Amino acid sequence: MQHAIPHPSGSVSHEENGTQVVESQISHFKKLSWKEKISYGFGDFGNGFMFDLGQAYLTKYWIDICIIPAAAVAGIFAFTKIFDAFMDPIAGSLIDKRKNIGARGKFRPVMMISSILLALLTIVTFTMPNFSTPEKILFAYGAYMAWGLVYSFTNIPYGSLASVMTRDVNERSQLATTRQAGSIGAQLITGIAFVPIVMSFDNPHHGFFVAAIFMAIIGVLGFYICYRNTKEHVPVMRNTKAEQKAGFSAYLKVVFTNKPLLCLILMTLFTISAMNTNNQMMIFFCQYNLGSMALQPIVNGIMMGCSVLGILLIPKLVSKFGKKKTAVTGLIIGFIANILNFVITTNIYAFVILVTIGYVALAIPNGITWAFVSDVIDYGEWHNGIRKEGITYAAFNFSRKIAQAIAAIISSGILVLTGYMANSTQSPETLTGIKAAMTLYPGIALGAAAIIIGIFYKLSDKNYRKVADDLSNGLWEKGKIE
Image 1 (cartoon, helix red, strand yellow):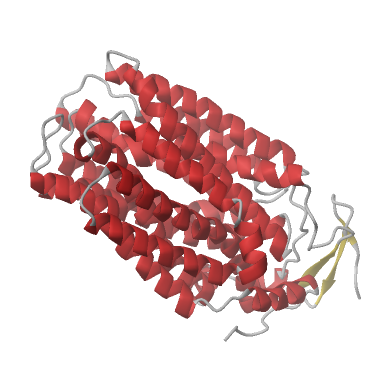
Image 2 (tube, one colour):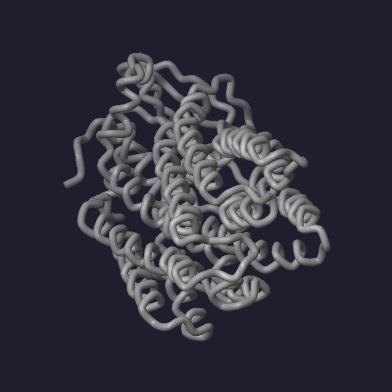
């Protein structure tokens, strides 16, 4: 017998063979308003004002301003990012286990509260008491580990939110576009504004601190717009019988039998480490290879401004060519542009043109990645009969944290290996090392990512529509996509 159970959304559910089936008047393939899609993008806009500061400027702050040895900074980034990566599954699991979910939804309240704490810790990371060098290192470890833990509870619910807003392929592509637009928009503004704010102060410690305050405030406002104007429209049909039996081994199964997710994880290791290495080394490249740190806002303005325009093409490109082909093409173009930028003798004009082409080409597949993530969450439920948005997104986010650790090791490590001296004229070996980290590594990484997603990722838009239709009809464990 079927027993109807009312839901706050106006839908009803009933039990069928241990499965709670939710029938909603709201379509799983809901067309979202542009207000809601743009508001979702503001989440990553807010995120960028806090996350991007650490990726682009903490290395410079700790090495040149706090005078922490570059080798120690590499260790701080590597250890804390790996620590953060292991915190992500814990955060995802706790979010998945949330009960008594109210009208505000499962993900939005956690995201909003955590973003406020994240803003405070962003400011703390750009603060350094008058300590001895060992004490500075310990303070940096503690502050950045705390930041990373809170970031997990901010970013995981935000990333999972898109999967319960709609299952429509085109709508998800547009959500991915607004998210990437928000991310690049934040990079553009911080890339242009941060250094001038810092340079307006005689004491660089004060400059970094004040700049971090401004960026953190804007970050919280971005998350609030997302929280205020988005909703979790998809009343997810839970396979409660399967989930009640699911233990830790079942959660591992959710991740490790999800082949599209594993491909996405491998791709992300390369794309995110490429992007972060580019962002971390830009300030060093402008100061030493191009001769002036003041060029950094100009280069960032051109590079990221063009990227904002590029990602606006994502919906049209995806509609015409599909997500996979569009992503692979972008990665190949990025590979070519970065390799050429390394081979060609350093010239500001050639550098700006090629780094811009490479960054735009990377921004497009990075934007599409967010649509991929929502798809693989649904695929995992379809394949295994267990829906775990938080733990699946956390597994994906794990790869981003490892990629960030890789970027930190490459960026700081190359400075150590080539004899970098803070605030000094650099040797030819150091300049070559900075250029290699800035261009050669991203080129190689994007080439590897193109191979992974081009050959091994099988969840095409056509295959995903089959998955979405089955889920909307309450069908699980259909098999696998070949």
